[in-house]
Length: 119
Image 1: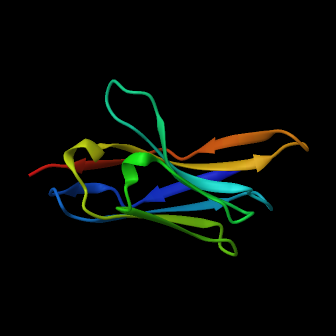
Image 2 (image 1 turned 60 degrees about the horizontal axis):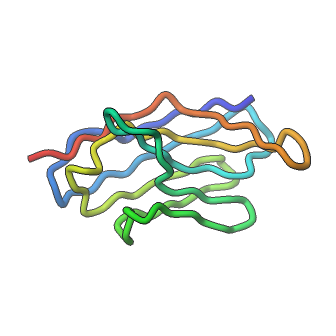
């Protein structure tokens, strides 16, 4: 099992920055860690993800505004968000993927942290 604890959300003006952090505990190996978001009335969508093989995956809307970093020793993942816009308003969820067999992964989720971009 994996437990995820997030921090760093809040209210920011358009053009501002926020940094989200997530710490994982309870597992010896996590294949990938990343962030998803869900705006009101919309489906949850991938923001960015880092895998243990070094590969990264970013949503198109990130457009070089966000960066993701991971500390493999501490099992943490951070999302630095710059030039935030009102359309970035959402609940942001930390995600971890742990192998359960040769071909399957289990998904784990944090409780979510609210990001509001408004003037």
